Image (cartoon, rainbow, N blue to C red; front, side, top):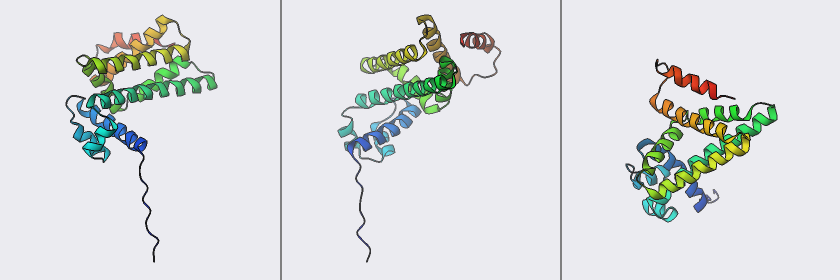
Length: 187
């Protein structure tokens, strides 16, 4: 006779994590306003009602996804900085390389673009996005020790990388001055 099967129940924290991972993918594909929460629940493998137990409003979920995106950027920057310091390499350059890899993930790139677009008409999401962006700037400042001008240049390059990545711009003749800017901005 076989012993009875044991069932491992997920905790609310585990389910919350699964929902956030699913929401990143789903919101990245269609944006915040065009994505029904039923799609997020389905992608996470939970009921719609349980989704709202974890995140009482769609806005709460959008804010948590936005915060998750910023957390990924911050974690990538901190890891790159630590690795660069250990290897005796330039921290700012390593962080720039890490960012390039991060936005090569279409979900991260699209989620950032959707967040910025949605923030225009949603003051609550705007505040969350602004706070997250501020944390990223603080981490860049802390990890690089760069001047305010150099931090500004680093962040501006990141936004340019977002735009060029979204456009799939690679070989257009008009890229020459932008490529020169990006090269000049390297440490």
